[in-house]
Length: 67
Image (cartoon, rainbow, N blue to C red; front, side, top):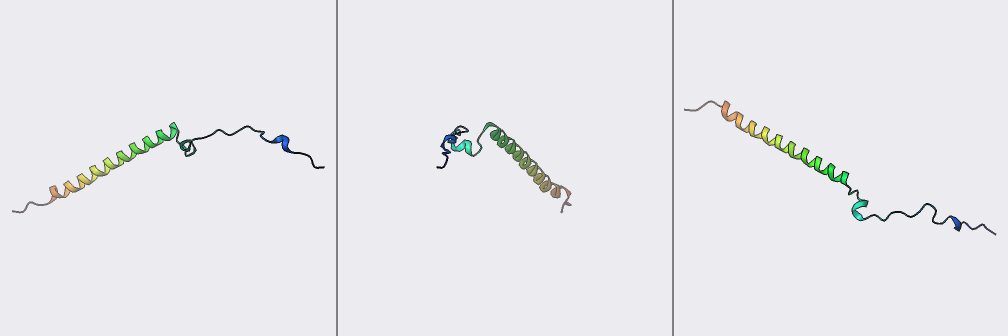
């Protein structure tokens, strides 16, 4: 007769039930990363706008006045 291996069933405990958000990695550290990324993006956009404004204003000042 074959030995029964059913005695090991359930060894190791049960897994924690995770919500869908937790499965996708929604935790406080992720929120902090998102905020940091958003701040970097806003800073980059601000710098790009400043450079575009400076580049747009510079040729107008350098152009000779027509009379």
